[in-house]
Image (cartoon, rainbow, N blue to C red; front, side, top):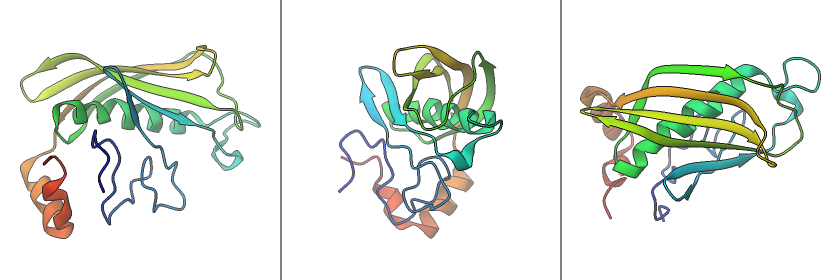
Length: 157
């Protein structure tokens, strides 16, 4: 059964690197709604480190990208990244719980501007981002539904 806010993929696909629970190499982020924010908690494993004991910046970028893009669920739209700007503020430790969040900053015709951050559980900001996310092009959406027909019902209640 699909989750009530349609935040997590429960189809037979589930192979996204960031959120797919069937991707053995992936992060397996699980999203929830907190007011108008999309939030996920994640404890990074050693295999994702860059410098010893420090989470690789590309993983932080992935977490922000996926979470901010997931704000499309608040509008029942699939979005893809058009632009992503990240400011890394502090090294992110591995083996400690982190929280990533994203929220809509502004809506435009066919696009959402979103903001987000990765924080320690005490609220210390490790990285923050702004991004522009656009609707998934129709040919790509159609090809996805052709390969995974259950996606056609993703936004139906």
